[in-house]
Amino acid sequence: MLSDPLSVTYNGTAKSLPVIGGRWPSVPKEVGKRMYGTADGEFVVATRQLVHGDTRNRVAEISLQRTAPDTDPNTAAQGYFGNSVALRFTTNAYSVGTSADIPLIRAALLSLVDSTLQGRLITGEH
Image 1 (tube, rainbow, N blue to C red):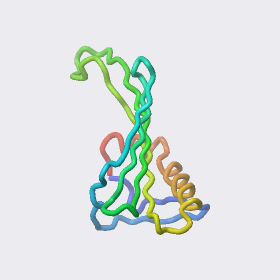
Image 2 (cartoon, rainbow, N blue to C red):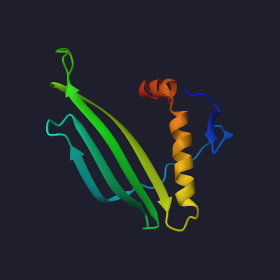
Image 3 (cartoon, rainbow, N blue to C red):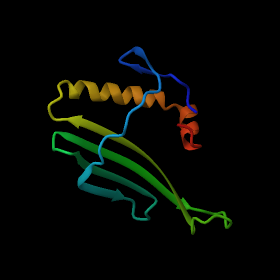
Image 4 (tube, rainbow, N blue to C red):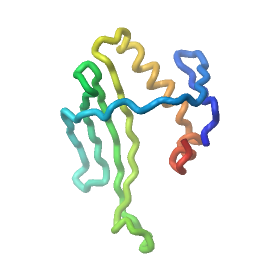
């Protein structure tokens, strides 16, 4: 289990985030996507645009995936394996300060996901 509370630094101020109850937001509807990739298929960047419920709540996602040959004959990867990293931006059309807030949230999240936390998430902690 990850530490409780987690600590995030937002705009230079440490914030304590204890575990809370709640539910995930509604499942978004995809309204557009585009993929970019190398000729050999090793790297792919995918972008998606989604909406939640009504068009005021928009989601933009970008991910980078690397697919490489799997040289271990004992795996079930059928010759290839892939790893990807994604960022997701969710905004509300009526919110103010989005242009200033999104970069601050992004910076806080990227600083939270250091190499130690990254390893813990990959191994299944939550």
